[in-house]
Image 1: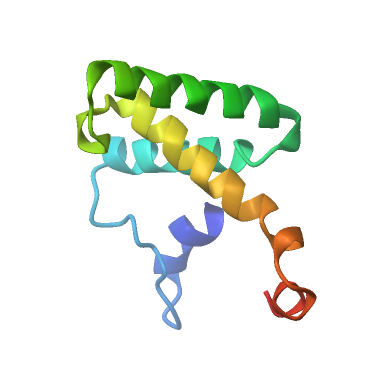
Image 2 (image 1 turned 45 degrees about the vertical axis):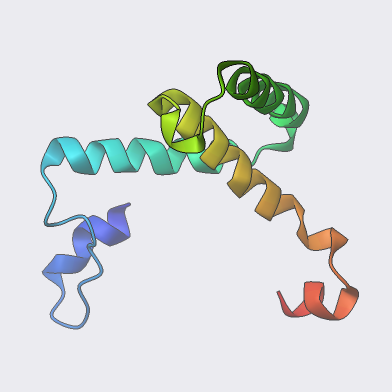
Amino acid sequence: FQLIFNSGKSTVCNINVLESLSPQQSNQIRNAMIQAILATDMSHHFSSVSCVEKIVAEMRIQNLSWSGLNQIYVETVMNFMLHLADISNPGKPLKVAKHW
């Protein structure tokens, strides 16, 4: 995050994609990014799978669509999707995995 926040001081390249946001919005995005990265930790894999299974089961019981989920569930599912992308590489054909 230091790279993002300090990039505006350089005349070469400004990569601060958060600069137009309020400090509160920037902090929310920063926290969401940190949580997403932490969600890729394999030590939480089985608890994450269980949690997402419970969310899907609740959606079925309540007949909810993805747009009907509360924010905590949305963040949980988004983090899990990043985790799935993170662990999917070994399942790809070797040629694709090496390039990826």
